[in-house]
Length: 629
Image (cartoon, rainbow, N blue to C red; front, side):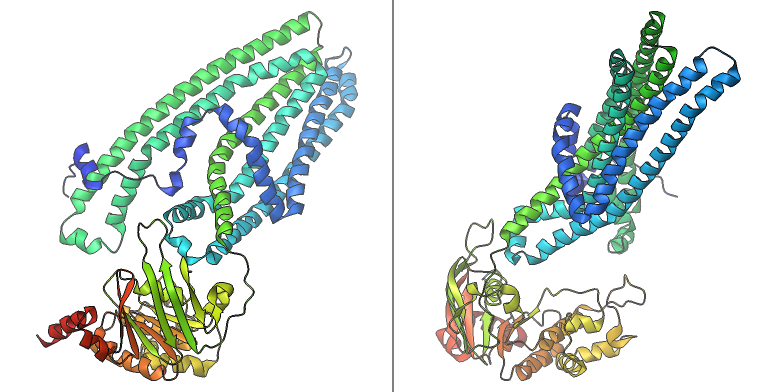
């Protein structure tokens, strides 16, 4: 076995580069830099947000959780007060049997209080466990409801995309934990209030003793948590480096080159260097946390000793009876336990609340991007589509993708858009299909301005065959029908025209075959086979307008020629907008628009454009010469 030689730190950093903070840890720096008072100030708003979402998910379970938790605190206090009666009877003078009999009523009350408190706690836990999945469901539905409704151009906005990633990767998953932690904070606070209330009723001077007893534990808990947060924040690059190297060692895609270039020892050495550095930091963290806990325990011991001394002095001067002192000790212990739970829940709630706030903010931002409802009905057909003086700029771009573009399409025509990469062909197609709205200019179907039509309804009248089509993890049938049901003859006809019937005939379960290897008995298709499925998808829609955006990019020359022939036959009487770099396939189009840097520079038939001897003629001649060479 080869010896692993760890690379130097410089080599390791040079090999992987500086790593950006991932969405999952984007708020760790905030957690590492804030104090407990800052956290406590934000608690009310976080708890309010959590309760609002919980109420939206299930008012009944939310009310049950809060009320049962409150009643649990009441019976905790009642049990502590009843304990005073027990201790008073047991510490009284007289024979032991008489003292035990005198204590029985209070003992029964203590038992009843404990039983009721346990039942209430179990009931609150049951209601909360019911609440968690309901909160998760409404959070996910809200997120995916707005992401699927917002305009497509939003996904081209870097700020929107980043906000979506934060909301999706962690924000939505924190909704149920935020609700649970908010309830834990309330429960811990109720426990402390119960203990404080009991001590206040027993004797006012006992309240400061509770503070004296719990402060050292609070300091130690906060100190230890802060150490861990700062350390974990510092280790995020190391975690990401390990994950990246692990992907190289364990994933299928790089497996061949890892072996071909004998990268195993190099990668393992790099992984070991990062892992050892991380290990050293975590070992130091364990030592620092132990010191903090020891100091906290020591201070807690001093505080506890001071409590006992104070109780002894109160007993010596007769300020409190022995039974009250015993109950005070139990109340202080109960308060310490509640404080530990409160501190943990508070830290976790603040951290999770940062991501939860990202989720809420994103949903508000996405809702604002959804336009007002439109009243005009989408037309079923058209005689003419016209785009007049259309200008469009992508979010964050310095210059427009389209500048003052005008095109006209008559019903039944085959129109081609050609041009070099980045000329604006696909952008124009998306505007004509209602996926984007122009910044300036209008798009009309006959006399109807599409700005007045609900985009969702309009898209139902348009079919798109895209180069970057989605490989849906669905059956072959659903990959073609896309949730519609027009009957088997239409399905089979679309598959036959696209040549997808030959692909499906080779699948083990035909149209019922799942096209994804992640499923049992699922199958994966080649790029060309997927392209045929995508073409069948467009044909199946039987739309008034068919947009073909590089529909043959994954096909060989023979399949490409056959597909264009099928599109021409299928387009008989239909309107087709064709985008392609293969200019031999557009020479029979009724009209060709040539785009260059977002402008229409030429238009006409193939013969017209060849006669102009412009961009189209140059591109066509280059391709023709390449085939004839």
